[in-house]
Length: 447
Image 1 (spheres, rainbow, N blue to C red):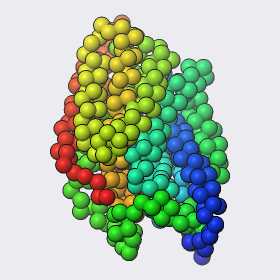
Image 2: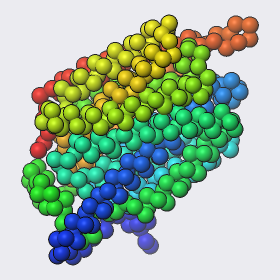
Image 3: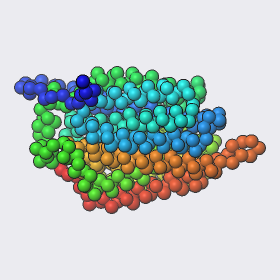
Image 4: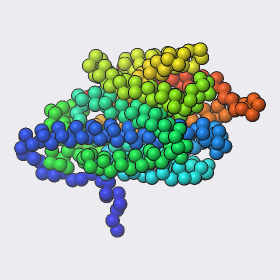
């Protein structure tokens, strides 16, 4: 009997190409396509995981679900995504990314198409949880592909570019999906991303590649003459190196900081549109537009973080994380505690928040973990951090749903929301993340 997992296994090494000019040409072409593929592909994949954030108000107002129900559905995604990131991270280190990544996007797209058909609580909990598992293919696959095709000295800059995918996907969702929902109702919020990601999966299969050695190319370390720690670990098995990350205390601390950061990040992603609609009087399109601008700023934030930490701080991440973290906390405090702020000032605060948060996300969500871990275990390191990150997001979803739900009251038949307790929780987790991350000040990259 054929093992279906063999379809996803990395290929065998091909005979090395002797022509140096051809090697350079192929490397440049594939690196360009792979960087575009993993960045745009992961960004587009996001649209199949954030639809629930956009449709919460029409679902609540339509009587389909309560805030607590939506918290349960949202948390199901994050629980499975957390462990999906871990297991898929370990698998991605051994996988052919050309097949592995598009498959995850395809299944996620099909789940979104089914979600638009039936608003039943138990079905949504199961399907959204399953979606979380397959969404967990994206990040580890992207990072493994990046580590196979880009060298150590390039890591910060290219990771920063790839990290813009988060903001790209969030922006497409908060603007594009919000527009679909405004025009055709909540079901369009699932149908649109589902169709879009089916096309994305097909394109990714065409542009992504397996490891360089399977194409007859030398390893990236040889081509760029950038060895270091990777050379020291060359004789050790991938599985042994993967197990070693569990013994690294810095990764555990980094995971806790990432969990707290993710609680704040996904609180804004999941409940930010509802917050702006109910506390600031924004329409769905206006709220989506503000969060869309926030994510556009994130494109610059990721890139700036990678460049600043590489060029100005010699690839040291903690000092830059502290700077970005302080800016992020101040921006959130303005958003939450200055209710008289004009729409323009509030939008500026969201832009600053998006810029700083995306830089922190680039570091705590993976870049620093890849620095600490071996390149051979980059997928496992991302998966390990992902467990903390999305358990934090899952706990947030349940807590936020409870805090918001218990403070809903009706006046003359009109539903009113009180976010006072929720925003204290959201800001508190951001401050906690900054404190925990600061304890890693002296930790340096494995290289």
